[in-house]
Image 1 (cartoon, rainbow, N blue to C red):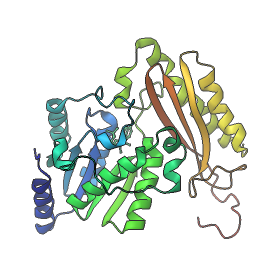
Image 2: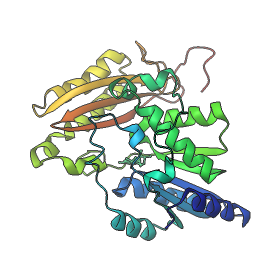
Image 3: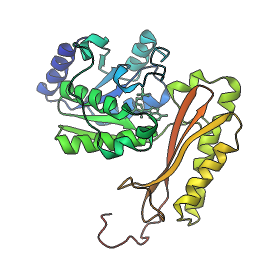
Length: 292
Ligand code: AMP
């Protein structure tokens, strides 16, 4: 286990100096099977794997439960080792932000202010700043992120492209409970009735996916199916349901290519998000000039 930024930088440099490829799995801890799927993928593709566990204060709004975020370092350490991680970076806050809140942060751009960014002002600036700091310490590597947070993956990719970080971003599929609920560290805060109700997010997304498979191309109808499933659940309070083009992340009137349905909803005091890819038939027409 490494607790200092300098120690983590040295350890990652040592791995590369030995000629090994490095996989990086950034997390906020409270590890579950979703996190472990990223570690397994990293272990299968990289010779050495580092997991970072850091609850990043910069990405939490004032009322977003930073203090209540689940923390269980000993359990995380054990699980990470069992999953095959070689390095565990668990920095205290003063190692990541020695001078307190940083004066220079990453601006996530226009997409960072829409959807999750509209509901959580400043969230993606906080995420990208800490991810860029981790990339700066780790150096050249493959970094694994979950598509459960699809907008985050998209913004990290954009950052890597725009800022020339020496990192290959790998997006990994969402791991779900048997009833469809996406695994999340926040699920443990749900009461029993809220947990039962929380399945309305994936129910709505799966309904939209089925409509997409039947050829529905009207984005408002697809997003409406997601919203309808959440609104039908008395314990849920919808934040947003949206359909975006997978390439541009714009919200189209009609789908013109692979797309994603997204949802955010409150269950009591817990805010959950989820998304699915909407199927797009092979060979379906795309308007001219668009990349495949
Ligand atoms: P977090 O600890 O919530 O910041 O998540 C750390 C990483 O795990 C992020 O890349 C998440 O997208 C990913 N992750 C969280 N939940 C899941 C899940 N259910 N399936 C796959 N990846 C996930």
